[in-house]
Length: 151
Image 1 (tube, one colour):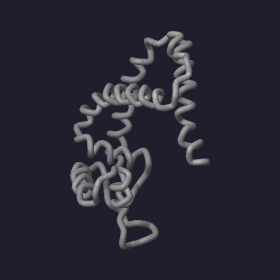
Image 2 (image 1 turned 30 degrees about the vertical axis):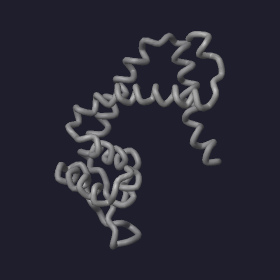
Image 3 (image 1 turned 90 degrees about the horizontal axis):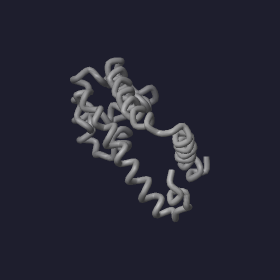
C-alpha cells in the first residue's frame, strides 16, 4: 500500500473512491450471474427473497424500487420458472407472500458461490498484510449502517 493512500481523506473524496471501487467490484462479480440464466431484475428479486426472506408483492417492489405492476411481471416469470411461490400471508388472508422455492434457493446459493469465488481470485493476489487491512475496512463498512441508524 502506498503512503499517499494512508493520508486521511475528506469524507466526499473517500466516498467517491469507495463508490468507484464498489462499482468495479460489483461489475466484475456480476459477470458470474449469467450462469443463472435469469435477467438481472429477476435475479435481484430472487436474491432478496432467498437471502432476506419472504415478502409481500408490495414489500418486494419497495425493496427493489419498482412499481407493483413491474414486480408482478417479475414474480410471474419467477413463478413460471419454479423459483418462487405465492403463499397465504400468516396475519392477513387477503395478502400473499412471495417465497423462494428450494430450486430458487439453490440457484441463488450457487450464484453467490460463483461471485464469492470470483472475489476470492481477486483477493488471492493480495499480501497477507493487505488482506488484513481490507478485513478491517470491511468491518468498518459493516458498522456504518449501525452507527448511522443508532442501533
